[in-house]
Length: 601
Image 1 (tube, helix red, strand yellow):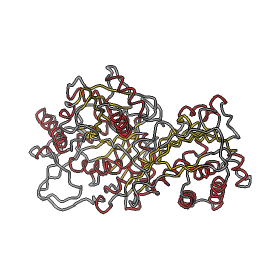
Image 2: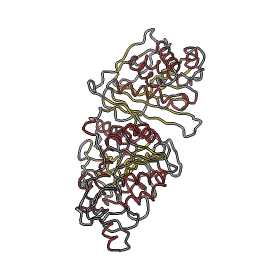
Image 3: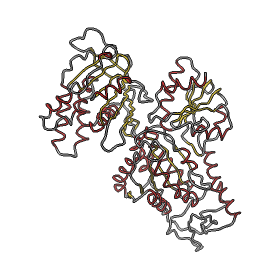
Image 4: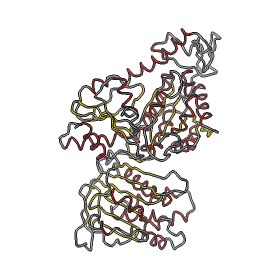
């Protein structure tokens, strides 16, 4: 919180009320306890209350569940990360307490279920402990019929009292969440919430009120990164998708399967990954930009068909929600280790575009950009997101749907003649006509994965192969010329430039803010367009003594992460270094500062 809480010796009978501009709340328990629901309610309430919010969660990869956390940072002003250390720790079990007490700020509040948690006496002086028999009070609240299955909602009531949260809005959120189920479920949930809210907590010497949000008067939407991506695709005009379930892509697939039919579209769950990308390519050829997606293991399976799309120059969007690898790896942990396969995966020279959104809001607009690039350049576009964004919840200004929504209905206007691979086309940019379009010359093109001539007919000519390789290459070079040069966060010259991509942008920019307050000459640069890279980066790099790429993958054989290695190869600049990690967690601000300042001192 804005002012760290330090427990006084005497506990007042009436808690004092403190005004705060932000708070970090960590909820620790087991995934089957519904702790993600608590965090989700808090995050969505913050968004509807015109505040900034960012979340982080860990969940076990096993079906049976296990230890899990949900951290939510709510702020009246700008929130760039989910926070390093928590102000409040809500824990349900001894293992939750033991594993996460170190994540709490000194003097912070530990709200624990006294039915299951025995505090460490050595830590009583370091943190303010508040025990509530949450499990037994939950059973009491719902008449003993549901055991302790509503303790997450009971705990939400406790937090609502502690932070003076908007009860009518929370009540509405609970009703929305459980409204489609048996009425008794809603009744029990509200009974648990109201009981928790009404409980007089013993030993709580301070409660909190948030300052009014800086976004007052602005309409906000609240959603996860996966949701934002899916809705961005719908706004972009995508009306066909195909996929196969895999964590953490499945949420996007489920949403598209539910929403596409409402707009005249279709989503097909296929028998495997290869069938999914093949169907999406077919839909792209039929005149619609289509989408498929997966995570690392599925992307590996799709690679051959992705090469076919590059050869045939098909508009296609492929979403890769990265997770820990290789193989099945760590299905529910964050990692940015698919950049190499996204750019270079597959045999032969098969250029494709690679984009990586930086936030939940950016997921929405990047999905639209990916569709438009795929259409304009007739090329596959890989949209690289990661588990850190996929499950993160943020609030952002409601999009102007009239401005961003587009109709991609195929155009069947007759043409005199058409060469989908015209070698005289400016910058190699050509587009397909939808099958069924009348060609007056009678020369109808075909498509194939073999090298081909201008009409798509297979050829073994080395000369034509060289020309077609140049065509496929040159249109991406043209795209690079049109990409905006990213803006430096902070001063345009200094000692260290931190380079980020994907979900690491927020923590890196927060690290820069903190460092500059202490006199360190740090700046940051975020790269959204990873292949091709925008022109002009070398001019930005020239203003700094060190350029450090901060990413979530292994340092590799030569001590550099995947993006750092690409930048070093592209610019032959020895100043480019790297800070990497693969612990399955997002970057903490203090982690970044400690690693970078040690590397560059």
